[in-house]
Image 1 (spheres, rainbow, N blue to C red):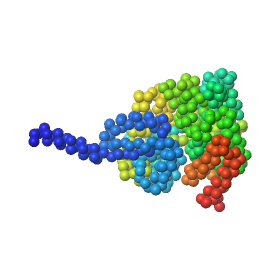
Image 2: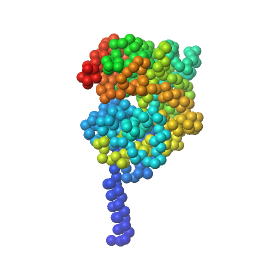
Image 3: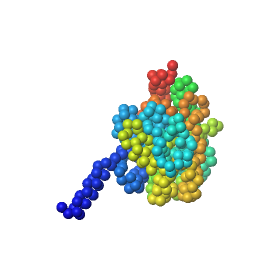
Image 4: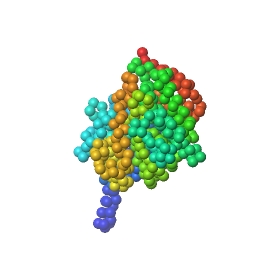
Length: 437
């Protein structure tokens, strides 16, 4: 056997050993555009970390929530990195289901995270998830359709104005719907919007004693407005539309207005994907009458490590990469500054290149500043959260109520019946869980 053969054999053996010792991280994530983009850029991570392989499980929002919740509650260990919201993080951290992120690296700059976002992901001073992007809610609208109808978007629009404008710019013959809103059932789907809407109407899920409030006039007024608006100005099949479905409709020019997550702005203004990219304007989430409560939500999609993972060191390396300032710069170099993940870092909103490239930067920051999840409603409440109630029971309860409300949009139920069902269901659950004594 020649020396060359021996050396080649040794190299092959070493390469095989390296492959065999490589850790595979299983990452559960949502099928949103920013997450899909991240998957396309992960060669940057794997080239720097050849001992780590990535396996993606990409799921629709409701399915993702169901699967990761089941897995972490049962200590199933299917995933090493979870994509979860700021609703789950503090609840799961307090239950010992998440590992703290304490080795993100010297260059990570935790202090650069927006205080409201960082605070929502921390328990007793420890960070339990890193934000991939943050968002609030705002209006995205077609400036050309407003001009054609003789309308001008106010600085602080009311629901009355929005409802009237949506009906005026609706043109069924041209396949233009005046308003696109979430109708798909789910605590993080239709109930994200409807809860924010109810907040702005002065509604609340529970009073100070945890008694459900769906039998109050604020909820009746809010839900009736929503249902009537979808009937008069919404797209067909609205009860099946979530974030992604409405995004597609808007990009195709079939929505005159869309009220949803601020993160959508980069997708509706991207000429590669949107036929109306140069026609989009932005405005604050509406208020109702004299209440002046925008009802804005404050949300972030975050990466966290379940306590059941046996690969926490590699998982934290990946999370550090995906949520770092370097990753932001990578996206900017590949896709342009307007497409970087928004809403997580103070430095981004001081970056002149970003502000120049992203006309939605200031409206996004204004929307996030308008959100106060510690006081989401007009009347006092015993809970925090903008578009959700920060208690463990809300995930199941919110989805059940969402199904009742989605059925009204589909024409299968009435507003009064849906609210009565919500009141009954919520009262039963809050009594069973010990909130109502």
